[in-house]
Amino acid sequence: MALQDKYAELINTANASGASNLQVREQDNVLYIDGEVPTGEVKDKLWNVYDKIDPDFRSGDVVMNINVSPAAAATQLKVTTQSSNLNIRKGPGTDQPILGKAAHESIVTLLSKYNDAWYLIRTNDGIEGYSSAEYLTAL
Image (cartoon, rainbow, N blue to C red; front, side, top):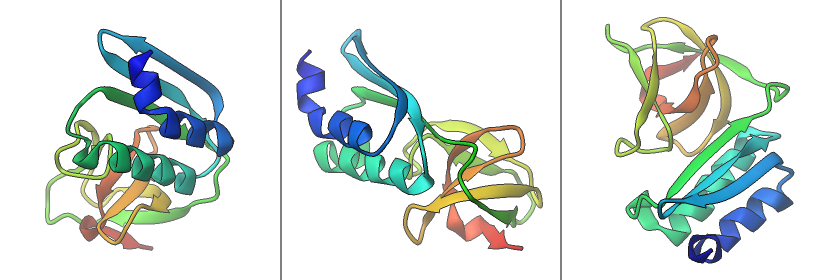
């Protein structure tokens, strides 16, 4: 229960932001937050709250498995790496785990712009996460 107290603002923000199927549980000193949010901006907001509580996500005591509703309006972007695949990460930062990759010159869906450096995207295969904006170009 201590982690739920530490991250109460994050849990409350998720609830207040319209998260559906929200499940919060503690296991082996890690807090798991699962659910779906209506927009990419809401997911970004949750990452901002998480970063405020645990700057740079250093403690590693939270796993957020939050996805954006497939109904969210979105823009298409092209992966414009030089030749390699683009890493898709759990959160906005190179220190975050890699969830998957988007192929060079493939098309992805923009869910939101976390900031000027990181975009929340989804591949056609359904992989959702954050990627460097430097390698994404509007169609």
